[in-house]
Image (tube, rainbow, N blue to C red; front, side):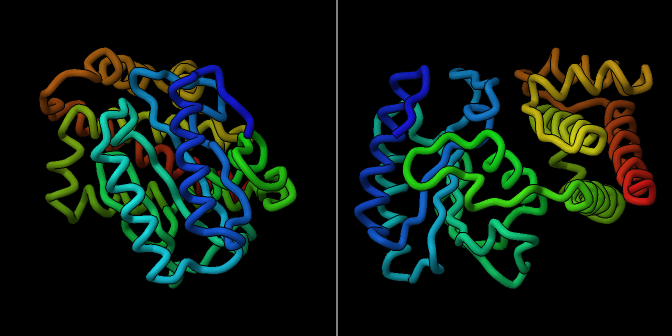
Length: 265
């Protein structure tokens, strides 16, 4: 197992490797670290541990029940990482091309229980991170499982995510209520910065890298929006009406940029 500079993280990785290997047995193709830990901007105080566990076939319900117990037990443990481990269990087939929205895979996110759902709209970014930066806990090197990522697939993913947020901003009051919360708005703004980075470079960057990159290229109003959001990221407050307007405006800009990138590509 490839270790990280963080002993407590290595303990968590060893725990999940041992338990998941026992549960999946020969069905497990590999286990990999992605996210900020793989990209090199890991912050032990705020970051999650992000894992991809690749299987050769879909996980059956009885095996899924054992995986659920594993995650429930860890979430209830005294570990500082108890609710900060995110895992997705795709098949090897889901790492090739665009997986069908009709197919669902076990997943767990921060502060959630294990659930089964289609892969996220930004799955292509996870695949890129896995191929180019993934840390091997077990299994073959990631590039043997994931082929080169098509830049057009990244552009399409950005368009889908931005279009969905614009639709929700116009027609979903619950989404507007959510994005008015400071932590949610910070998440949206940081994600938009990462998407802009991917549109221009064809690569994936962590939030600490993508945010200053985008801030240096965006118009002043959006640069100020980013600065204010990050300065108050720990605050328990709702954003102002002006901030909400500018956040939606930034979503629109990212969507239009994705369309421009697609037509130019």
